[in-house]
Length: 304
Image (cartoon, rainbow, N blue to C red):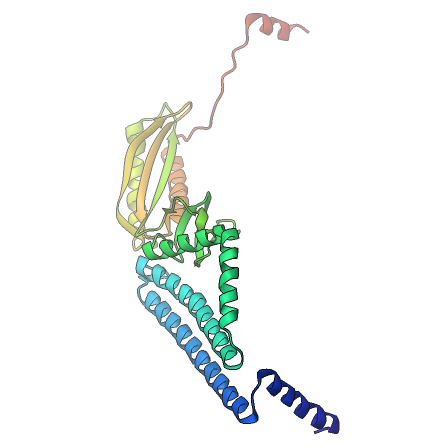
């Protein structure tokens, strides 16, 4: 050891002892206790992370296949994230206070923090609202990680749920952080099953009954296709004429699919319907507008 450190370190050590009003033996004893507390805290963190991993494994075991999770699985993944964040924070905070209590009297500090916390709470009402709302969202299981939901005018896939906020990623890949206090109405698009709804317009000159018959055949082929039959739930339905538009007759068809597959199913159905209607000669019209010109305007337009 360099001579300078041999002088400085013992002096610094004795100054620390004098500050805490401890003798050498008492300081070593409390330092040992602090090491034990830190070790126990590390073990508690390991248990918290292990519990979260077990919850995730249980969630994966509940998946029906191809990476899709059931409602129980989604809730398990959400709870695993919550256990990591809340459990880790509680363990670290408790260990820090216990270590500080070994060397200083933290009673006044805790009391002061309580007063500060009370003052801050009046200015952080939005944060308290978010936390309370997040607690009830998790308790009542409105949605979980992997669900496609619409909240606060934002629609996307739930990537993470905490007591403070919900993280959504929309179809364009944009991540939205929605404070839980702003979640007033939840629309869960993937609870138990999803529905692919397709509206198709045909010309007024077409035989509507024939178009509906062809549409039913397309849906039947879709439901029995090897790539889709495991994801289709129940029988596809052609509900009939949905509306009489300005230039088309709107027909509606829908099919129930596994959670989250509705978007892909809608795109595939539109492709199949377009190809089949073209083959059958059924016209899918485009909007048309007729312009009537007054007789005077016609003569003026014809004048060279």
